[in-house]
Image 1: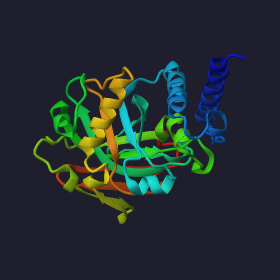
Image 2: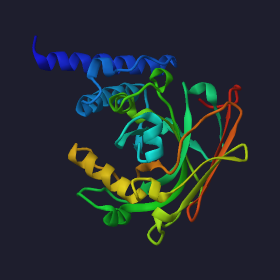
Image 3: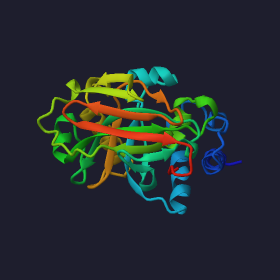
Image 4: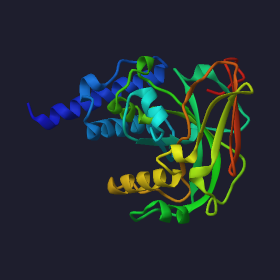
Amino acid sequence: MNVDVVIADTVAAAAARLDTAAVELRPCAPVRDLIGDSDLDAAYRVQVLVNRARMSRGSVVVGHKIGLTSTAVQQQLGVDRPDFGVLFDDMNHPSGSRVARSGFLQPRIEAEVAFVIGRDIDKTIDEFEAVSFIEYGSAALEIVDSRISAWNISITDTIADNASSGAFVLGNQKVDIADLDLPAVRMTLLQDGSQVSAGTGKDCLGNPLAALAWLSNTTLLLGNPIRAGEVVLSGALGPMVTVDSGSHYSADITGIGSVDIQFSDDEGGLP
């Protein structure tokens, strides 16, 4: 049998497994049994198919997320490099909103710096050039979620699973980040008023702008440049925390602002 056909079949099978898990809200087995635990190209091919399936049901791409930028998070998940995924319009929840814990499989939450892009990034950039492409920054919460049972993931599992994307919340403050020392900003994440995570901008690949440059250069190489108006979640500033039903989570990032969300399992929540 043609090797390319075999690879295409395994990629399609992995995508179908993850998409079924997402639709049925039922965790599945890892997909590394199909694509291996080191073939990043195959993992991103799976991600493309998973995201196409979601778009076929009406979801619209509004940006990207960078994952695994924090050493603490890499250690939590047993991986050693960043990855990226796609953000959809129906992942976006306003700060202060109430969302249903039951709309996720096994969510965790982390705080980070978000960027809204002001113009297309159509060339290779470094962290110093990245700032000129940003319209504004804001504090953000990302709800990461894995379709893989018990978060039993390798790097290929999480990439295939759209970088374990779940949802995101942007703070209401829109700040000009040009004069901010982003590596020095401090993040504090509270659960019901008690601190559960903390970190600094330096914990995100040394600088959230370095994360943006990495993402932009990577997606440009793949023929999918970052566009004006897109949201970019630059990556966690500290360890992620398991989401508990009924809990309120709030984060503050010095110089950038605050953001919060309430989880519940009642019918008033939004999945």
